[in-house]
Length: 560
Image (cartoon, rainbow, N blue to C red; front, side, top):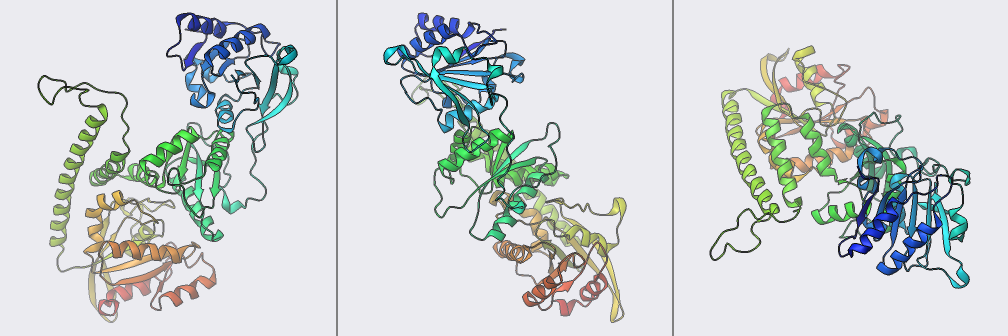
């Protein structure tokens, strides 16, 4: 295994230049000194000759592990460049950079963010030529816990700084851990629930907030809930309030630099945005943040993929994911798999990107055919239930629809529908029959269907893929719109659900059912009455108001 590697802009190097760079990469530095002065002067000579910066990464034993040719901000994550298992031993790293022709020793924001990937003990930066009088300008920098990635520790002559003992330098230890500003309200950032579990993905939330602070807090809390439902742990939050969104990346470059720095401090492995990103915007964000980026739609699709239990559910989720990913494919290289002889067949051949697109298009056609069969099957099931009254429970995700179905049907244990306090716990529609007995008339059989929950800005591919499931809602004789009064944003949730139902073409009667009356403030009951005079107040978990709801469902003409 090689001790060190040469990477970066190595194309076009003459063999002699490459040999010199490799010798400098393998040159050993004293552990009790910052660096070997003679070796760095030779590095500066090559940097001047190549007219490009050179960065050497040295471990705690003084061994060179990586020599990067070119600007450091083009290197990506340095950890991925290291050979062998040593990439996991990130103690006492030292960065040694010849800045080339630039006389500015302080690292730029993007370059500084890349340098933080290894959490090095120090960073020695110097120019490619000595100044007048033989003085060789150089500067020592250490990781900063403030607004900038690095803080200057000392500036002076290169020879003097190379003789410093890294262990004896003040502030040369690991940078202080990041703490959120005191001005940030607890509701405006992810809550602290301890350290993420081993192997759990650490997520930084990147949010464009509206002017209304209460609405912004609700949207951030919802995004945090989506991240936790996906099995990840939100560890940080970066917000920006912008009147005009940048078409290239939505966020400003200054805010993205801050987000990249925040991600390094918190050890985030993924950035999740609250807005849907176009393919170009997603690529721009990944380039500027140097981290994988997922938008809100991809996050919801991932949750659906985890929750899909039935074959029909998995089918619909796969179709939605393929429709989402098709325009976001990126090709790598050329695949000459369709070369031939004759007019129209010569040239570069078919690219791998084109093959991937064609394969996904074929898979989408196949899934659409299966969904048509699924839709026909559900239509036959509805015909068999002809003559029975049908209602569907609709509402925002985690509003208590499944709990209400269990309470109305008095099902418990294995016979009950899964009801959990998390977003999108139920994907597949479940229909149960209940027999309603009331003093005002004969018994009535009723079919009640629990449907998938809605959410703000539901991804269009998801709505299209789940159209066969949503037919259970569209074909019902009436809808019970379940809302959780303990959620501060329930009025906006009602507006969202009604808008989605209207977009689907639903015209059946709707009745508002206000759930969680045992947990909501008293003023919410009056707000619900002002919104809908015929609202039904219940608590599905405590059994409050259920008999009144059964009586209303029994007396169906008044309901319609």
